Length: 268
Length: 268
Image (cartoon, rainbow over all chains, first blue to last red; front, side, top):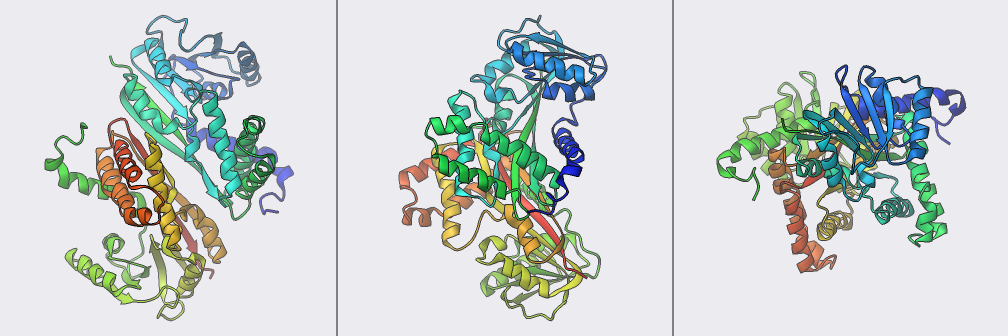
């Protein structure tokens, strides 16, 4: 089918690590804290970002919290599997954190605000436990930043289901573009936002495979049941949509998605 | 209204030049040809890009063609006003160029393919007059890459009018994402495409003013008559749409748009 799918199996491990590496660098390369820094990771989930954060900051003292004890258990395993020693986990609600004021030097929040009904309130709550002069780093996606070629009508519709399902769950998958005003309105100073665009064409087989086929399409497929139940699409159209999304991974296809990384500082 | 609109008049000249400078660098900084290179600019219009190209390449011999003699006249004035001496103008159709095969070392095409019904055919025609080993450089926008905050419903609709009007005129304002396959299918080698995203928030007053207020909104307003005539929107909704677009230029607003720059080489 494609020049890059040939030889897939023997190169899989290498390519997967190349892909992870590419996205990891794109999003995380510049999240580096000084040795000894007390860092709070708010909303660590199953620890996918925790591992990266801890590896990039082996001499920081990281506290990772999540509201779900189930996720925390997986995060613990994930961190242990990777031989990481500088993370402690704690079950906590981001809106009522069990820490003293000014407890942390820095705060890290990645793919969390998009799931909250009150992201500004969350940032305010986080600011309380941050030391004056400390920074918050926020990374979020923006599903409205996604476009592709060829642009099949059903693929577009399926993609919009993803946005609508998240909105139904009181989340906001279009939050990336909103980081700047959110950080400003939460009272952070020296706010800066930097978009990190992922552009994929067939000259980048590791992203075709790792981003379009292994990240984006499974993410869309993940809302199939809800989308069909809520009658956002008919099953036949959904199936076509997924097929059309696969066309973007063929040699003539392209895919674009943008993450946003933002920073703010608590006033001294 | 906004912190950056205060003091507007006294800073206007400076800011306009800063904005032009920012976008100019984003798109053109890496279009540098060797001294003596024979460069064809295809579709120069009124010479907006010609001036930049010629200033960045004072020792190249530039030939700029356009199908419209009216535009060429303005381009000539534009170039003269800027004291540029290394450009000659010629009226020509991109699909039947009045040059010998292999006449040029390099070709430059900026904001042209989006207006053509057969962009691949245009690239093929250009390839004929390019020397083996020579390069083509293509810059195009992609109107589907545009999103903003706040995202007013009428603003979105007005923006889509822009895309639809261009489609009615047999153009394709979503061509940026398609550059890679277009260059490949036209037979160019070593094809590479690099997206150039413009991200605007209120920490960048020169882009708020120069990009949102002076480029984007006037561009949308430019299709008002066609959009209303074709009954794409009602006048009241259109008016609201333009108001909503202005909100993206206020302190809480953000705006995103991506240009695509592509390169290909003619086989030796």
